[in-house]
Length: 555
Ligand SMILES: [Zn+2]
Image (cartoon, rainbow, N blue to C red; front, side, top):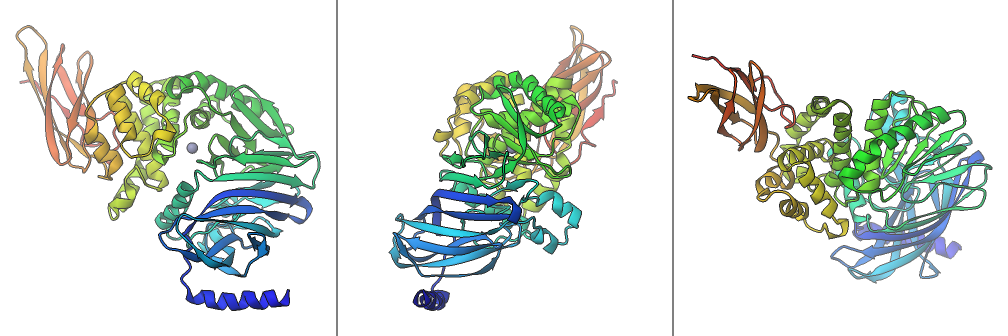
């Protein structure tokens, strides 16, 4: 044993000199037995992991990172103890702001594409910890709302990478004070590991509790070990919750709530059921059940992972609950490896829910709430346009809010039926190149959409900025008027924008494609005296809607 320790230290010194590539290996499979002891907040884990060298170079060493409140006990390679050196490594992929890193000497070159299998034992405690947020100066009460992961007597809720490294991972240091870089590191990790598998057996020493998991596993009592297979991990973050939860089970949704909250739980379930026909019409039948898991922290920020939503069950009015449930129902129905599609469609579903409740105007007002943050993000991302193309971005504002607008604009451009046909034809496994969805949409709904995808999806051109330049009316011989409207787009992205001529009796709407940094005109026929022309009803995101209308003066 002493010899081995000496060897570890010696190997540690030699490793300092060899370059360690923390991103070289992809963790392709986990098979873990995790024991949770709520009284001591302890987590003890053992199991096997499989890693593949996805770099272009042979690798002689690899890094394994777990939360800094956990410690490595044993690492074995192909059945034999292996030399490794451990130490703290500052990284905000964990709530403590650091990880316990083991640098393992493989003893031979592992060529590109080759795999290694390691047997691991590690353990420690997972107390609530908001060190990484406190380091940024976040007020404690706000930090507590976000970093709520813990093992405790009251409840256990532990999210994976980005919150708690409860299973081994390895990334270069991610720093929350650099949000764009942080999102990039975490987003790249998740994308690389979407096809990886995780098998978890969860032992719990408390009694009478229920374990819920992200992914497709049903919640289950933990009187005997509970188990969950993430096969594959996909868009989820491997997460487990153990608490005295009671089920309210309906065909489309399970609400796991705490005792005494059955009325609120029923409100959530009913809201989901009311939205189900709309979501099915757009995104097809559900592939999984929505899992709503109550967290015993009334102020906690909710967390979503695929069709699962963890958070406090706050009573709310029926419309808000419907809008909230539309998001998770969309995730349960529609799968995609691309964030702008997966998350963008779920946010689009929320706007559709608002439209179903109170009409298009209400939906556009809902969309409008996301414009200020989007404008701010677009201004900042114009510095690094390569990272901010919608098709590959890890920036949440872009893949959520901008994508929501993109889906709404596509829907306006190709019709509901056209977009729904394309969504029905979508196969996540076939989505291997950026233009896959564009081609589906062109085949199912409307040809020649390259210009739109080029400016909104494949590259980041910022937002359009419309100005209504002129609206000239002319009386027609047979009655009515012809109004020639000219719209200028001062922004960097082309868009097909709704143009409306208001008359003394009703409006007449049309659509006009205005290229970036250019003008476009259209003649719109109206039966009554025109009063005003307006571009953009709010369905196309732009910073300033103040110069979009012009009064029409009859000579
Ligand atoms: Zn989502």
